Image (cartoon, rainbow, N blue to C red):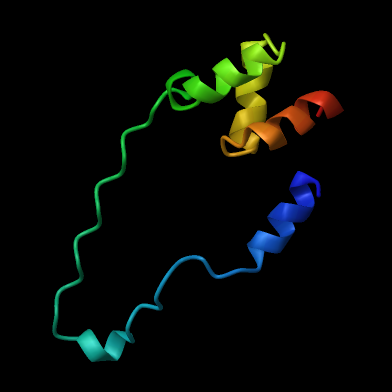
Length: 87
């Protein structure tokens, strides 16, 4: 199965968790504080183990590897498919 087909399948799934309560139920309660954003991690650090795997397979262009891993959300198999397809 290719990456776009997998993305299409997962796109229709509700993976976000519970539905928030109705606004009228908590009209008198203050809104909860937003969680702080996670600090950005450099892709070289975020995908370090995946980059090692790709290097072991002969994919040595780190810029292309990082682009493929970013699109594939770190999935090495999908990244390899992307690298081999030239997209």
